[in-house]
Length: 123
Image (cartoon, rainbow, N blue to C red):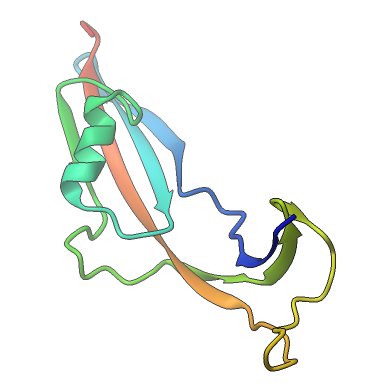
Protein backbone atom coordinates (compact mmCIF):
# COMPACT_ATOMS: atom_id res chain seq x y z
CA UNK A 1 0.00 0.00 0.00
CA UNK A 2 1.56 3.23 -1.19
CA UNK A 3 0.68 6.66 0.24
CA UNK A 4 1.23 9.51 -2.21
CA UNK A 5 0.85 13.28 -2.08
CA UNK A 6 -0.28 14.44 -5.51
CA UNK A 7 -1.52 17.52 -7.33
CA UNK A 8 -4.14 16.14 -9.77
CA UNK A 9 -5.63 18.72 -12.07
CA UNK A 10 -9.17 17.66 -13.05
CA UNK A 11 -8.85 19.62 -16.32
CA UNK A 12 -8.15 17.25 -19.23
CA UNK A 13 -4.79 17.55 -20.97
CA UNK A 14 -6.63 18.78 -24.06
CA UNK A 15 -10.28 19.61 -24.77
CA UNK A 16 -11.79 20.50 -28.14
CA UNK A 17 -15.13 22.29 -28.42
CA UNK A 18 -16.96 23.28 -31.60
CA UNK A 19 -17.83 26.93 -30.98
CA UNK A 20 -19.85 27.67 -34.07
CA UNK A 21 -20.42 27.44 -37.76
CA UNK A 22 -21.73 29.56 -40.59
CA UNK A 23 -22.41 29.60 -44.28
CA UNK A 24 -19.90 31.60 -46.30
CA UNK A 25 -21.95 31.51 -49.51
CA UNK A 26 -21.24 29.76 -52.82
CA UNK A 27 -21.63 26.35 -51.10
CA UNK A 28 -18.85 27.08 -48.59
CA UNK A 29 -19.26 26.75 -44.84
CA UNK A 30 -17.02 27.34 -41.85
CA UNK A 31 -16.77 25.63 -38.47
CA UNK A 32 -14.90 27.17 -35.56
CA UNK A 33 -13.26 25.31 -32.71
CA UNK A 34 -11.65 26.16 -29.39
CA UNK A 35 -8.82 24.01 -28.07
CA UNK A 36 -7.98 24.25 -24.38
CA UNK A 37 -4.69 22.63 -23.34
CA UNK A 38 -2.73 22.39 -20.10
CA UNK A 39 0.46 23.25 -21.96
CA UNK A 40 1.41 25.40 -24.95
CA UNK A 41 0.75 23.83 -28.31
CA UNK A 42 2.79 24.37 -31.44
CA UNK A 43 1.06 25.22 -34.71
CA UNK A 44 2.16 21.85 -36.14
CA UNK A 45 0.48 20.04 -33.23
CA UNK A 46 -2.79 21.89 -33.87
CA UNK A 47 -2.43 21.11 -37.59
CA UNK A 48 -2.04 17.42 -36.70
CA UNK A 49 -5.40 17.57 -34.87
CA UNK A 50 -6.97 18.93 -38.06
CA UNK A 51 -5.21 16.34 -40.24
CA UNK A 52 -6.66 13.62 -37.96
CA UNK A 53 -10.19 15.05 -38.29
CA UNK A 54 -10.59 16.24 -34.69
CA UNK A 55 -11.17 19.89 -35.61
CA UNK A 56 -13.07 19.79 -38.86
CA UNK A 57 -12.15 18.94 -42.42
CA UNK A 58 -12.22 20.54 -45.83
CA UNK A 59 -10.11 22.73 -48.07
CA UNK A 60 -8.93 25.37 -45.63
CA UNK A 61 -7.75 25.43 -42.03
CA UNK A 62 -6.33 28.16 -39.84
CA UNK A 63 -5.46 29.21 -36.30
CA UNK A 64 -6.85 32.63 -35.40
CA UNK A 65 -5.29 33.00 -31.96
CA UNK A 66 -1.67 33.57 -31.05
CA UNK A 67 0.30 30.35 -31.44
CA UNK A 68 3.99 31.18 -31.62
CA UNK A 69 5.34 29.96 -28.28
CA UNK A 70 4.98 33.42 -26.71
CA UNK A 71 1.26 33.25 -25.93
CA UNK A 72 0.18 34.02 -22.40
CA UNK A 73 -1.92 31.53 -20.45
CA UNK A 74 -5.67 32.04 -20.74
CA UNK A 75 -5.94 31.33 -17.02
CA UNK A 76 -4.55 29.40 -14.10
CA UNK A 77 -6.01 26.37 -12.32
CA UNK A 78 -5.31 26.22 -8.59
CA UNK A 79 -4.69 22.51 -8.05
CA UNK A 80 -4.85 21.35 -4.43
CA UNK A 81 -2.63 18.62 -3.06
CA UNK A 82 -4.42 15.41 -2.12
CA UNK A 83 -3.43 12.25 -0.29
CA UNK A 84 -3.92 9.02 -2.21
CA UNK A 85 -3.39 5.39 -1.38
CA UNK A 86 -3.00 3.15 -4.42
CA UNK A 87 -4.38 5.92 -6.63
CA UNK A 88 -7.54 6.58 -4.60
CA UNK A 89 -8.07 9.80 -2.59
CA UNK A 90 -8.23 9.26 1.17
CA UNK A 91 -9.67 12.62 2.23
CA UNK A 92 -6.77 13.10 4.68
CA UNK A 93 -5.08 16.48 4.97
CA UNK A 94 -1.90 16.60 2.85
CA UNK A 95 0.66 17.17 5.63
CA UNK A 96 4.33 17.01 4.71
CA UNK A 97 5.75 14.29 7.00
CA UNK A 98 9.12 16.08 7.24
CA UNK A 99 8.01 19.64 8.00
CA UNK A 100 4.55 19.13 9.48
CA UNK A 101 3.19 21.81 7.13
CA UNK A 102 0.40 21.28 4.61
CA UNK A 103 1.43 20.96 0.99
CA UNK A 104 0.48 24.14 -0.88
CA UNK A 105 -1.77 24.16 -3.95
CA UNK A 106 -0.03 24.24 -7.32
CA UNK A 107 -0.83 26.93 -9.90
CA UNK A 108 -1.07 25.31 -13.33
CA UNK A 109 -1.61 27.53 -16.40
CA UNK A 110 -3.79 26.55 -19.34
CA UNK A 111 -3.90 27.84 -22.92
CA UNK A 112 -6.77 28.42 -25.35
CA UNK A 113 -6.44 28.32 -29.14
CA UNK A 114 -9.10 29.26 -31.69
CA UNK A 115 -9.24 27.63 -35.13
CA UNK A 116 -11.47 27.41 -38.18
CA UNK A 117 -12.05 24.87 -40.92
CA UNK A 118 -13.70 25.72 -44.24
CA UNK A 119 -15.31 23.22 -46.57
CA UNK A 120 -17.34 23.31 -49.77
CA UNK A 121 -20.50 21.28 -50.24
CA UNK A 122 -18.61 18.69 -52.29
CA UNK A 123 -16.91 17.33 -49.17
